[in-house]
Each structure stands twice: as C-alpha cells, then as structure tokens.
Image (cartoon, rainbow over all chains, first blue to last red; front, side, top):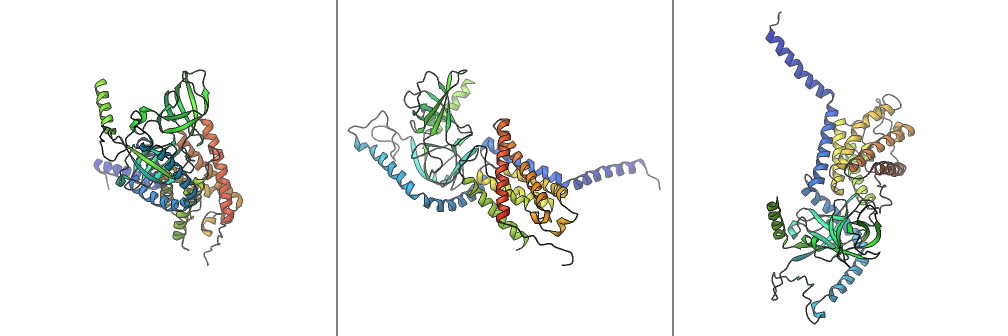
Length: 301
Length: 177
C-alpha cells in the first residue's frame, strides 16, 4: 500500500482535529470549570457596572416573594415599634398642616396636591408613594433593601427613597411588583448633602466599614461644624430628593491637616437595622432637568 | 431518602439558613461574615460526576447571589471549591476505595483528621476567593487578609457546630450487600 501526498495531508489534518477532541475530552472538567468561572465573573462585573444582572427581573420577583413571606413573620414582632414610629410621624405631619398657620409659608413650601397646578400657580414636583420593606441587609459590603412596590405601582429606577426619619437610598432595580433599593450603606451610594445650619455642601458616601456611621466628604474647612449638627439633602440632590431631608447627624469631625476639607462621620438618621416602611419619592420634573443638562453638556463639548 | 431528594432539601435549607438566619445577624465587625452555606458543596456525594458537581455548585451559589444582590460572587467561589474538591479528597482519603464504600465525605467516612483538613483547605480557598473578588473592587491588603482569616475562623466554628448537631451516620457499603 502506498500513500500519495494528498492522503498524507488528509491523515495529518485528521490527526490534528482528533487531537483537539482528545484534548477537550481529556481536560473536559477543567474546560467546563473555566466556562462556569467566566460566566460567574461576567455576571458579577457586568452587574456592578449597570446594577442589572442577567435574569434579575425573574429572580427578584422570586426572591422578593420569599422575602415577603419571611417578612410577614418578622413584621409581627416589630408591630409595636412600627406603631410608635407611625404615631410619631402622624404627629409630625399634623404639625405641618397648612391649617396650623395663618398664612401659607410660600418660601419653603413643596406642594403635594394631587392636581398638577393649584390656584396660586404652584406646580407639583414630587409624588410620594409608601412601600413596605420586605428584605434588608446591613452586614454586607454592599447593602440593599427590597421593597414591595414595583413598576406596576409606579416605582422606577433612580427614584429617591426615604423613611420616617430620613434618607434611605436610591432605587436601582425594579421588577413588576418589587424594587431593589441601594441603601446609604452601599459603597456605590453617593448623595449630595449640605449642613443644615450653614449650608456648605458635600457628598455623603459609605466606606464599607461599619453600618453605624457614614461619611461626608468635601466639606470646606471654612464651615463651622460641631458634633450633633444636622446634615440634610442639598438642593443639588433635588433630582431625587426634596431639599432638606435629614440624612444624619455629625458624630465626629476628622480634621485632615493635608487637605482643605473636613471629613465628617455621620450617624445615619434612618435606623437601617429596623426600617419597616419607606416612602418612594418621584420627581416629576426629572426628565426635564436631565434633558436640559444633557443638551447643555453637548453644547459645551 | 434518595440522594437526589436529600440534596434538594439540603439545597433549600442551606440557602434559607444562610439568607434568613446568618445574614440577618447584626455585624460584629467588618471582617466577620458568617458563611456556612458552602458546606452543601462539601457534603455532595462521592459518586456524583464532577461536571454535575460543578454545575450544581454554580446554581447553588447563584441562587444565594440573587438573594444577596451580588450575582456571580458566590457562584464563582462555589464552582472553584467544587472543582478542587475531588483533588483534595483523592489526597486525603485514608485507603484506596474508601470513596466507594461510603456515600459522601464526612468524619466517619474519611476519619476526623483528614476530614478536618479537607474542610479547612476548602474553607480557606472559598473565603480567599470570595474576599479576593470583593477586594478587586475596594479595600486594602490588610482588609483582605483580616477578612479571610476572621471569616474562615467563624466558618470553621459554624461547620463544627453543624457537624456535631447534624451528625451524619454513614453506612459502610460493600459489594456483597
């Protein structure tokens, strides 16, 4: 039997292809392992960029459901505390009723009518929607809350979330009946804040170390800060929150000699350990503001 | 109970315990996160194909991830220990064929000392990889080391408690029976 040159080439090609198959069969476990790792890491890093995981819609509907069942149980044990909080909030709101005043305080007022315009020409800027917290973490490096309100109830991405005591966080993901809220105890959380007394602005974030305090950076040293000062949402945060919502109180002022800014340690106003009910804030003029800013940045480029 | 049913029940229980008990504990320190869920991967039967082991571990990790809003993080770590598991078992198994005589890794089937090493090694690998992935996003080297050691310590303690509370009676299986 004699081989022609062509036969030899075909045989060689056959050998090579066979080698690849052999290789895959020999190391199939390892190849499969690498594929799974790549899948996991892809999901992980993709998620941190956009806060949108693969299947997250279906998954949060399911996990939200289980969280809701679990919450039904724990909710019972917190009833007393919740009632106290609600009563306190009611009292606070009654004090703010217009009928308490002789004339409306037009300089401070954020109008909350259900119609878009009232007779004085105030237009409605914020809509509030109550929601129940069904899951909440404080011990992870990135903490989130799950609330039992979703797209069907008018909760969308990027809305601000507050509790009876102060700011809670921002909605980052929604399914039809649940929404995930990035709490202040999340390393990517950034809220524009100002000192209530003097008005200096800065940025509130979390360094991931202890859920008992958050930090406010970039406060100029010209500001006179003392322990116990209130920190509220700044006008620049109005994209998501009304101005003047309490974020926290100053626990400690860190005076870094190498910088011309203070770093403030804040005690969060919201108690993240037992938050039960939150209010989602919708800014009706968000799109208008965003559009204008985008157009302007286009011109500036 | 068949293996499939037993492992399905364990799957659900481990996830529920991790999400609704351990993750609800108020944090003692930023380094300490009580992880015990990956014991599920360590308890998978010897007879399972490695491919199936990895796939099950991946799904297990991913399920937990969807509860903690960190998709991929625990899935990656679980897949890694599922891949390494057979190598560690092969080194540590006391005599040839022990994996045929018993169903799954346990103090009875492997002996206390080899089983402890098996748990220790995979716990360290799991936690190091998990914290490493976190560390890529933030933190310092000290944070990394501290968190790996503290978290592993807590994990080992929890695993010991689990092993003592839920002692698994392993029957010796022979060909004749």
